[in-house]
Length: 141
Image 1 (cartoon, rainbow, N blue to C red):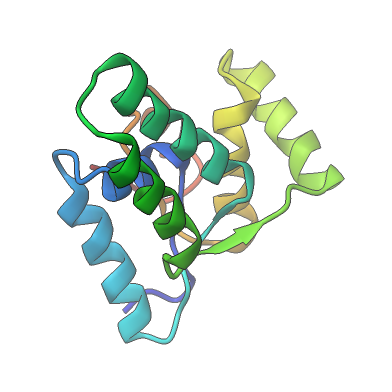
Image 2 (tube, one colour; image 1 turned 60 degrees about the vertical axis):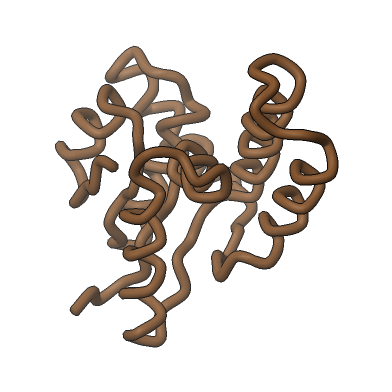
């Protein structure tokens, strides 16, 4: 039984919303959290990154039409995820992690959130998962 809600990074949210390979694992994490009255966490800007992934599937990959894409955008706000705003302390910690590991602060923000909250980080990013595993439990999907 998880003690704290999991932290979903943008790659995990995008994978779930777009039903890409491994989306079931992300959905299972959310269901397990809900079974224990927990709401998964993420950062507010993860929705914008997921929006960018949806755009790529419409404009570049031509895997989605605009009507379907607009429905996916709506689903970003209806997912049972608590989107948090990064405060100064979280951003400073993300910067420290980013400098230490030579990795983008965008990604290390999710590691900082998982460290702060004690939640497991759920990601599809293998490099980020290796960094995060030094600090928190990680699920690579």
